[in-house]
Structures are given as C-alpha cells and as structure tokens.
Length: 376
View 1 (cartoon, rainbow, N blue to C red):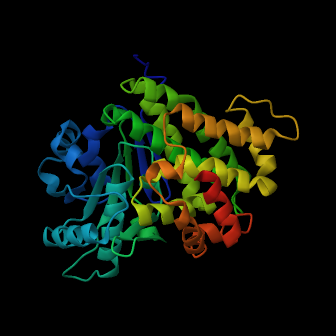
View 2 (tube, rainbow, N blue to C red):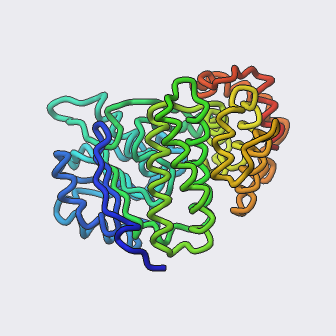
View 3 (tube, rainbow, N blue to C red):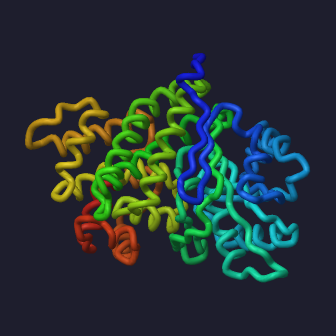
C-alpha cells in the first residue's frame, strides 16, 4: 500500500529535552540530528539480529565515522551484566551518546548505562546522553523510566531518572517493516496499556487524557492492520504516532497496578513484557472499574462500542481482551509456564512497586492476587 506525503508528513517536534523526529527515511539524517543535540561520538546499543541485518547496516551508514562502537548483546528485561559490559566499553571509547536501536530492551539498556555513566561522571569518565531509534512500540524512547534485572534474584527494579530521557527519539517506519508480527502485536498492546493507565492515573489532566484517547484510537485502529499487513508503511507510521504519544503521556503521569505486576512477573519469569501486558491488562482494568468507569466510557468510541448503559465499563474490558485474543497473543499466565502456586508471592512482591502504590484504587495483597488469579 502506497501512502501520500499528506498521510505521512515528516515531523520534527520538541518535547522538553527530547527532539522527536518522525518520517520515512528519517534515519538518513541521524548524524546531523545528533549534532543538533550536541553529540558526535555515537555508540549503538542493539540486539544481535538488528546489528547484523539491514537495519543495523542502514544506521551504521547514516552515522559514518561518528560511530565509535556497537554493543549487540542487549537482552530482555536488561540484566545487570549487560549494563556492566556496555558501561565499560562505552567509557573506553569515550562515547558521548548511546543510541538505543530496536525495542524496549536495547533502549532500556542504553538508558541504564547512561544512568551509571551520569552517576559516576568526572573529567576522566564523562557522561553520555541517550538517543533512541525504536523498531517496536514500547514508548521507552520518550520516557525517563528504565528497568534492570538481577537474574540471580529474579528481581526487576524500575527507576526514573530525568537525565536518561532520550535527547533524540527518531521514528522511521521503514526500519519497522521487518518487525515480526508477534512483536508488533505485543509491543502495540504495551503502548495501549500506557494509554489506559493514563486515563485513570491520579495526576492526569484533561490534556493528558485527550492525548491518551487520541493515541489509543490510533493503536486500536492500526495495530490489527499492521499485524495483518506488516510491510505497509502507512500502518507502521501510524503506530509510531500512537506509541509516541502513549509514551509521552506515560512520562507525565506514570504507571499503575498493571505495569507494576508485569514488572514483577517479567523479572521473575523472564516472560516478554509485551506479552505480559496483553495478559494482565483486561484484568487490571476490571480491578480499577470502581474508580475508572467514567473514563472507560471515553474508550468505548475507539473500540466501536455503545457508550451508554451501566455495563459499558465491563464491555470495554471485554473488548480489550477480545483485541488481545484477535492479535493471537497469549491470554493466560499459565501458557507462559507460571505456576499458580507462585501467585501469592508475586502479589506480595508487587506491593513494594511504586507503580502499584500509585494505582488510583488502593491495591492490597488480596487485590493483587485477585488480578493474577483472574489472569492465570
């Protein structure tokens, strides 16, 4: 499917400290864009598949001799060991920007390494900023959040640090054309979860909710299309529009019980974050129905539901579950090999999560367990 330039305009949009660039072929301007954010020594952080494929080749060509190194060992949930390796090599090469290329894992790895470089900076070991080139829809490229995992303890820690918010977020839909359908689906649902949690977050403003609904509409409308026709550039472009705005609103209002539970489960069982999002989201939404019924009515329209009646909130939750199922994503924790007998300890661990503590409906151990058992 070909799209007109009107349908896919080239966008440059400053958001605080982050320069957002969206457009087909945007990666070809990478070196000049890094200069605009005062970076000249780029170190690419990615996974092995992208590093050796056409996407990695294109990024290397765009950087030219500004590229000082590549780390291709990023892994899901950002194990501490990978951060240690990256910090050591990036410091030895005096990189001034870590370019996360790919999904939430390499971008998160770049953020975690930048955080350590910032904390330990001195004249001999300068800090590095972060730039991000996503090929999925995690939203990490515009947020100050990052997580790392102690694999020995099975514990994932999530931090907020404004200095690691990427200074450049570059969205090029051409780089996402080969993103696998299952990864497109799961990370798209992750972006939708950002929208949902923003709708009922305690500190959300009307403007935040408006952005969340706009992003949710794009994701709900285009995610099934992109999964069905992965090489249609327009669908990739629109998904980037939605995930970018979902990430921006996440950065403003934070997360709730849904993301808190996903972080605990991901750290303990190394299950993909996006897949966990799809499983937990409808059940976390049902848990929050007593405080979120009004905002769920706003979600009815993009889900093509009648926004009237006492049960509209339940219908919205059911429709989100149907969307996850239609995307052929797992819908039960047991399908990931998570034992039911472990759920009480997962619920207990989740209570220390700041995201869980920020949920608009107070979460007790029993409440967290209710969500987990419904999702099992």
